[in-house]
Image (cartoon, rainbow, N blue to C red; front, side):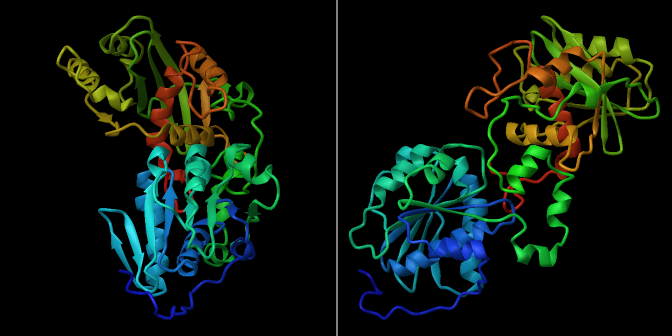
Length: 434
């Protein structure tokens, strides 16, 4: 039984000073509408305010608020929604086990759902739905939700999404290239958010030192960039990054490994300030981790300024021999004079997207700074940086095209991620998306 039936709807004033773009988005009466904007453009606020508004307009009915993955739904979308409700003292009941939220004033229900498993989105009729970071959601999820937007009791049927541009993807095609009238999109202008600039005047300028130019144009300026190349490390060039690199005997060696049997690959580097300098590479066909250790020892046995080891987190998994790759490395160096060895290996590998973004940002920032120098002797690494590509039409690195590729750039990526990850942030709320 609906306890709100027959009761007058309470009017509530919200603490919300919408930006010009946000106001246009809310005014749109299109059946399907979108809000496209860069970091700091107020996407999360627009999403939550529109969801609350539609839950009042469609009193007693059901809507859905979704996100590309469950962690993002739980840690970003839901937190933003609850934050707006609490700030405005709007009463609600949240059932975390069922991931539903009931608005007490209206009796309206909001389903909180991850849209990555889109076949599960079939079911009851909806009066409205909204999707956070739509450009990271599958198109099939949007189509399933469109099919559920059919509650005959709804006063205002509406589906909406907010997103950061991600090239000329399905979101761009649907909202920018469809027939006008059915779909409507509001594009927020860069630097429009006065609320951020009042608190952090140099917010956008500081991001130039964290992002590479292409990512800066997409995430900060909100541009829709055509796919000019599917190169993964698009900021690399021989002219800017390859040259003479010598060992500095007062600095520790940084050794990063990718545990692949054929070939077994690793790179040796040093760090001075913000700069990563790649000194050498080790590539051995049909080799073991022990073989890689012996080769490293042959080349660098006289370096006594410390050693830091990085690598693939899967190297912590047990082998058929009953040991792990990192245990094998420890056993090897226990037999040498090396004692100051630090292992900087995460419990799990970073997300590929985050690792690649951090690599490109070290190769060249949006402000034009380069923080990586590679010895000309690292021929295979240089080929990796030039030739590793994404599979056509995807953001998945192609590891099948050439079995010799990706291993050295992966190893370097693990090192760069561990050393530089704190400098690079992702997403509207300084959270990674996946």
